[in-house]
Image (cartoon, rainbow, N blue to C red; front, side, top):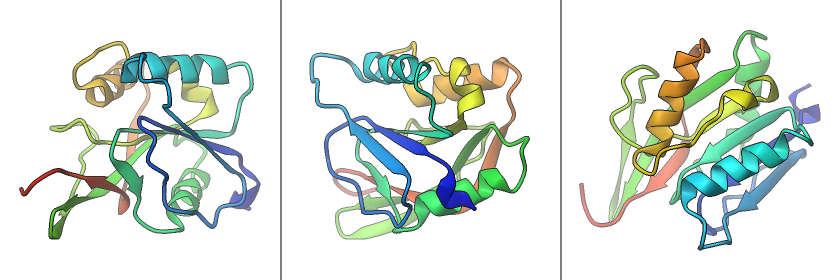
Length: 165
């Protein structure tokens, strides 16, 4: 049963996320404004290597869960096949006054707003080494290390954007 798997959501930012019906979820927020996003994400992934959870979700700033069962759906996706080590999904972009669905192709990332979810066995491949497009470059590096990036064709995350599209 997916509820038995432990999940840590690592959030760039400090805006509270939508409550999840998933029981074994921990969320940590970036409260240290001195660290850059990449420093924060790398420090969290390195710290977590010593106290492993089953799954990790790295969320960019202004990212939230789309529904109260987003984590459940992602973990069910991972549980559907043991070879799934890295997963991304589609997003909803929320602008002032309207929302837009965004398909996210795992090999053609053209934005930096993609949440990255991984099994603990892939945690050592996580490297947010860049200051620009850190999520794009992290996925590229994961792929270069031989991990297939799987795509869940459902918008599990909502990205809040300023202004209009």
